[in-house]
Length: 209
Length: 179
Image: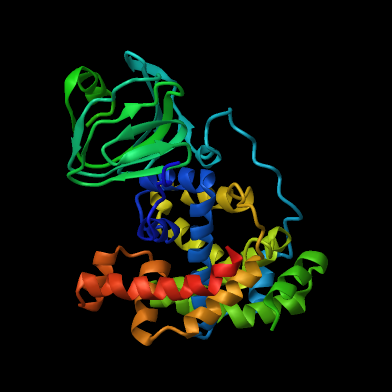
């Protein structure tokens, strides 16, 4: 059993504070949704926020509790309506976003765009047939990936369902998709990525790199 | 003050007195926290008021097994701040946080109480040196990258990393038997 690949504390904290690009955040959120260890780490980070709040410095308010209640008019939500479930295989955190349609971009590889208004990163789901060799590529920006199903393997290890692959500048890698299960993942990209080979040439215009 | 019980009193009986106590305790702290993170005073006032208004409206959704009241309130303030900062971008990030909180990520085997975790973290933070505390605050609460923390405090990156490592080891020792 390989060690799991988790988002770093630094990445989780940036995510929790809303400091990361929304597209990158979405890939982190999918990882947190699927990975109990990172969900736990995120709860700890949130608890640090709570503790700092509890012991933090108080600055006097100009308005009072009565003002707040007056603005509210007393209304309360009595329960939550369960969020509509999306189709199987799509993380729940993608619910607020519009998804494109799957389309083939090459032999054994399909892509589905995730529209994230205002994000700098480009976000998409990628599905690759068992045994596919994804094109070798090099980054000037970041490429963050959460594996939704199946697995792939490259120079930095084997990445399976729920794992987070944080490839930052100057990584060069060459993923090999699991020969039995194939792989579906969600990817966010910033900066430039240069692919090599036939699939790269197919992918390049589609991900507008 | 048992903040968890006060939130639950709002949930069960729309207890206005419980709300007043929560407001008086937390609104000034939310305001202080936001101002410390660089939010201007008038906006911090507005967001602090909205945070407590959200506490009233969503009290029924408060679940102390997930997080204690102060953590819950801190995340509400965080979501409002994000919404405000990204308003013009039509950001949906706060909805993403709500989905993670509401439906709960896939649970680990053992269920631990959020209130208990909060208490431990609070206790652990009191054991940090002033320097460690500041680094934790910037890295974990403000979410700055380690490099940005180093730049802000004018200390070497290695110092940031070693302070954080020590602080997190300390924190996780306090949480060990909960994990």
